[in-house]
Length: 249
Image (cartoon, rainbow, N blue to C red; front, side):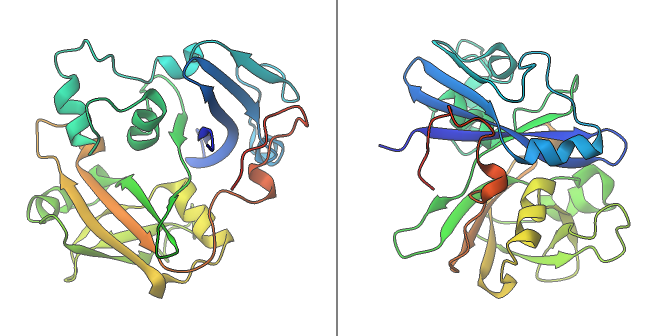
C-alpha cells in the first residue's frame, strides 16, 4: 500500500509566490517522516531558509507522532465545530490528519506555509484533485457569483495574462463572464511546468460554503484531467536525502 503523502509549500512574503519545499509521509498509523525536497534548493534563491522545526535540509526527520508544525494545522475532532468544518471540506467525519490538511491547505494566519497533496488517479485514466478556490476576496463580485453557483456546475480555466506577479496564474470563471477566484498558486505553477493541456481539464463545483463559513473555504472544486501528464512527481519533488522513504508516483 502506498504511504499517504502531502507536500509543504512556502510563500515568499514579498512576491506572494508559493514554492514547494518539503514532503510529509505517513508510514503507519503513528509513524511520520518529513524530508526537504529538491525544489527547496531552488526556493533558496527566493530567500527560503530551513524551518525552525526542521533546520537541516539534508536530514530526514522521523517520529511516532505528527510533527507539531503539522499538528497545529489540524482541527481536533473534539471541537464542536469539527463536523461542520469537515463537511465544508467535502470530507467524511473520520478523515485523517493528512487528508484534512491537504484539503484545507492547513493554512494559518501566523505563517506563510501551505499543505497540499498530489492528485489521485482515476480508474479510466488521468487524475482528479479537490481544491479550494483562492483569491475570492480580491475579485469584485466573486462572492456574489459564487453564491449563484450550483453543485456540478462547470467552471472555465483562463490565464491571468496581465498578472505581472505571476504569468502562470489561472483564473476560474463561470460559463458566462463572472470571475470566482484562482487555482492555488502551486497548482498553477505545476500546470505550467508540465504543460497541461487545458482542453483535457474539467473543473466543476463540488461545494459552496456560504457565510459565516470562512472565505478561504467559500468554494470547493473538483479538477479532473484526462491526459497522461502527472503532477508533483518530477525530480524537484523528490527528497534531497537518499535516506528518505521511496514513494511510488
